[in-house]
Length: 421
Image (tube, rainbow, N blue to C red; front, side, top):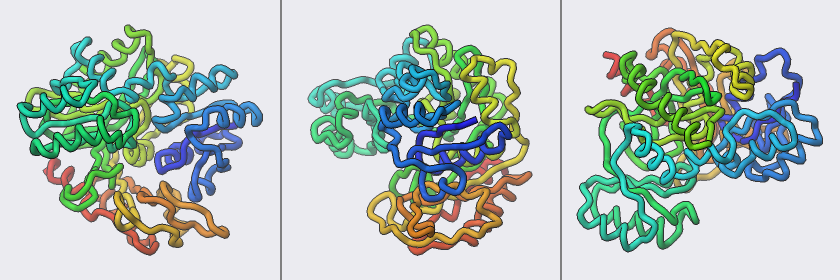
């Protein structure tokens, strides 16, 4: 089989390595891929948002199956375009991808179908939003409606920050049209949990839970990032919480999308908060999370491609989705200065014996040498029988890798360890 994976980050590298385990796979193409992914797939310089380019390449190269991994191409309709030329895909169509593509849509969906989430208001003009801010309880959460590279959410502790957030999104258009409409919602407290789930629109099978670490600095300080590391499973996601999520959130969401004529087939990501009143949805994503994928898929014992095809063919009910009982930890190695200014172009040294568990996010090949080319450079993952073992093993691997200006958090998984104790 010839497989096409759209995207070029650590998440895509993890997916590609896992798909390679299937003996029927002859060749994998990554569009655009990156310097590290080139060790596991043929990288083709066609951007993830170049839908016409992707379709033309898939047709010309007689692709048997495609995986569209990032949010942008899904929201733009990459799956619809590939399906139109007869290529089966993993990922939701454009109509279903709106669950991530529009915060307004997803909040209204939850309200309509009684799915627990934070109270909220939608604003389409800045003056109304600014008026509301004057009396809104603090802290408050302000979200751009559309995709904003994971940066479209501001938690405002004071009114000045809230006003600045509204003006930057709605008036200054820092996120372009994504900030034309905004959601201002209640600030929830409690442990956060990420749960990815395979669904074919009829059956939903959750993957192992995970805990992300968004802040750039140790002890959850500093700026928000795309994620500095993850552990799985998440100790706050107990059996009773999982049962409640399945009954009140997961299945109702699948059914709600069906009722709206937007059947979701692919990986549905639930960003949850375990509040005093039970689990609530903070956000939905229409794809695998990054870097959650880097701890979830290494624990998957079933064949990933087989599961993906079952989702496409709507046979998920008859397909085993099995995870190991172990633990995983992923430490992100970034360029110093990320998520703000950073230098790149430094040679990366990864020992061959640990390369299998290193997922490359931001790197390029330069004269055959792998060099840094992004803020988040590598996701370094280890699995073990215990969480402590996985954390120690991940950091042992980090210490074997070198590049100039390397930076990582030193406390990935410590919050989870405390929760276990």
